[in-house]
Amino acid sequence: MKFIVNRFKKPTLLSTAGYIFIMALAAKGIFLYGSQHPSKKDLIFVNGVVKKLKLGGQGKSTYFKIESDRGTHRYSSYYGKLWQGMERIHLENRVQLLAERNKLNRGELLTGKQYYIWELIHENEVIVPYEDVRNLVKGKEKTINQYANVALACSTVFLLFTYYRKR
Image (tube, rainbow, N blue to C red; front, side):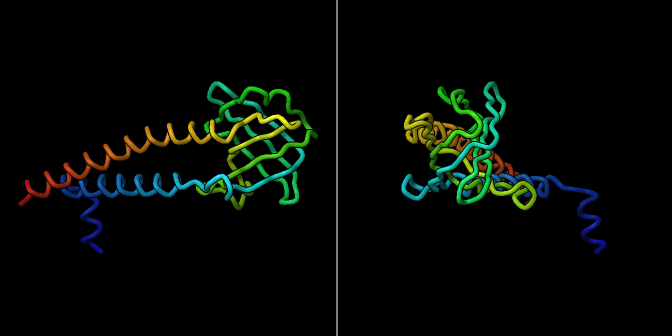
């Protein structure tokens, strides 16, 4: 036990490089897990009534609480985007949507299940088109993936450099 305590009191350059590499590897793993989205035919179809809504925009969240045969759950717009036509949706309006469960929701036991909207239909009009959401998500994830790859590459180089320096 004394060995472990001493290890944390005096971190070496090599151990620091190792920790950074492990964090970069974990971030890449979380990204890969979170970026696995179901195909359109595998999304959850919801036909329900709006019980609560919050229209965001400008960096604020946009979500609906929708009551359906699945229960009442929160359905959020990806990245809080406010889509044109959402302002016409009011409480007690009926909507249909395709949704994906938020796999990374840590507070699911407290907050309940949460979903992301992939397609939203109100009064037979497509407010949120599936293809637009798909393009938005893929574009953002491509950028995030580039940063994760750079962090992983830099941490690998740093780890190798410190390992050879120690030898």
